[in-house]
Length: 261
Image 1: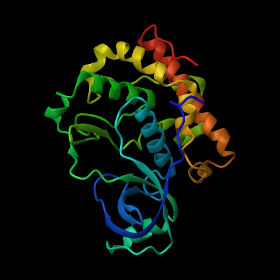
Image 2 (image 1 turned 180 degrees about the vertical axis):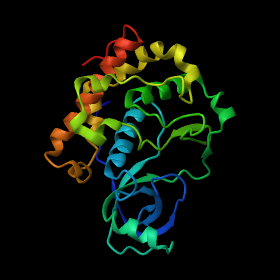
Image 3 (image 1 turned 30 degrees about the vertical axis):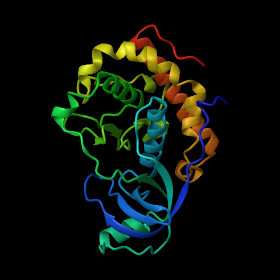
Image 4 (image 1 turned 60 degrees about the horizontal axis):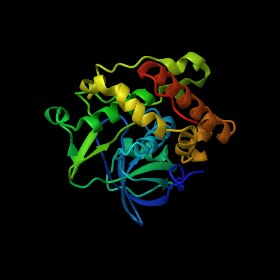
């Protein structure tokens, strides 16, 4: 495996206390205290469940291969009956449903949400890279009304990828043509970058070799993939096959560049 593709396993943090619940969005994340600090944690028992955590992991890994910034990640082990400073019956039920392995993100202290006027001033290279990635992973959740980008010290941080990879919510309906699903470029936050998508594809597609895609998926723990049943390695291969086919479809749509093996 090349140096570029090599990826260490995610660290594991053990939660000792829930500090607070973040009350925005549908994923009901919490901030938890661990021995190594605080983690913004998305819970396996929330909303769409574990598949959203899988999507978060895979897309963050792919983003970083494209030199896009995402918060550092850790698996967060949540024990039964964990103490919580946020006393709420609904939250307690959610915590009880999330005992085990969850997904934590580093807190982006002093970060703020990207505003609509700011989005128009994002460097074109960054904007088109985000648009291209979202096309690959079928992200319909990065719009002018909901950028899912934070700004901190001049860096744009991509967040909230739980709605990507929609095919995983119904594997039985996945067909060859599923990877060819059209993408609404015009409705994207960075739709203005569409005229240079083909050029971006020439630069970005070669960076996501089949090996790199496989390695990006390898960080997904068996504890997440077990919700589908069957062999975890085979399930990882299924994600890889879909993304590879999607990338090949994009090559046909966006120009002469072809991803290399």
